Image (tube, rainbow, N blue to C red; front, side):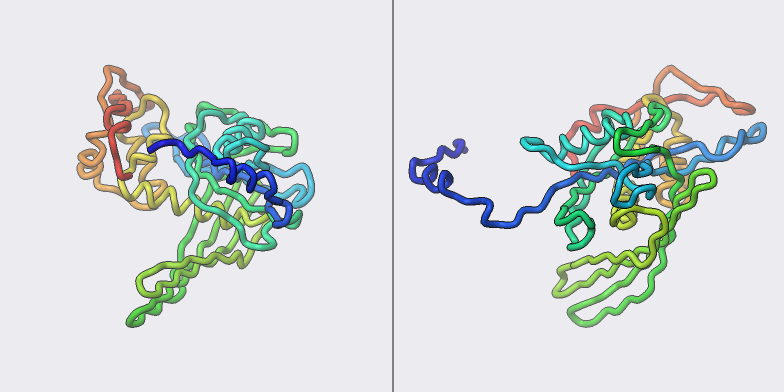
Length: 303
């Protein structure tokens, strides 16, 4: 297909076009950055350290929501793609670079930001936490990992002949040492003639800025759903070399359930390559280390 070439008439139209005749929103990028964290004190002999899912938050240094915690993010600059905004802001605010970044939702509810009409593109980001020692940037006082826990409760489910409505409650808990944040987010899914419309409402919010409780919940759901589909996304939480045990553990942490080891390893077999390296832990036999099978990751996929 040939590239479009503007005619003289089209150029005249654009020259006289007054874009200021329409109200325009500001555009921001917000990143929900997840990692697998080591939790608690040093474990007993023969016991592996406990691992938990974490999300990266910053303590805001400016108004609005000064001293509240929120996701790293910021405003798009002129002539900057929103993906470039996400990469830039993540590096500037936290020093995290080269993270997996994937857009997962647009947040445009009126009144979501007290500064004005601001639309945010949400990004799901995954990193190996051991590679980064996060720091805060100019508009944040702190950048730190918080353990995340999301409890799900289905409140109502009404199914009719040609429509349905399902209401689910998500109880979000975030903690770091003596800091505890929480929120309650309601999801309403309506199906009419097989078409789905989903709405979210923040019912309670303790300590989080803007509508970031909703963004975190939806990012967590996106991560969980992608993990359940094929599990390929989980590799972006892993170091370059890993054991199959640690890979399975990461899946179980995200899914919130134990997996049958033989089934899991058969599912992952196409995506990993055994190396000559091994690792020894206290009280354990040396475990073989694996790495990604790049051929599998860069072949056509519907994941």
